[in-house]
Length: 54
View 1 (cartoon, rainbow, N blue to C red):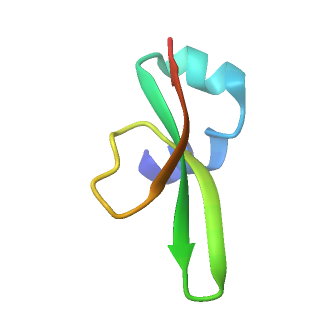
View 2: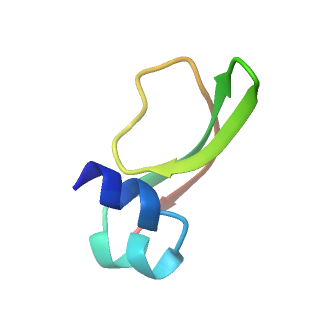
View 3: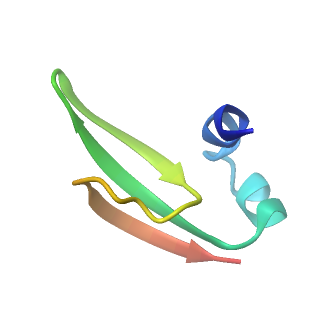
């Protein structure tokens, strides 16, 4: 289910369907950074760009 969340999290309709609070985070990687939406509050060292609550 977590992999499916990660794949579909870029779509607003999916985030609204799942409800709850979502965070758009920038995760630093060795070759740049990755921006993605997460459903659970991130515990890692990452930069929170935006939050949405449905």
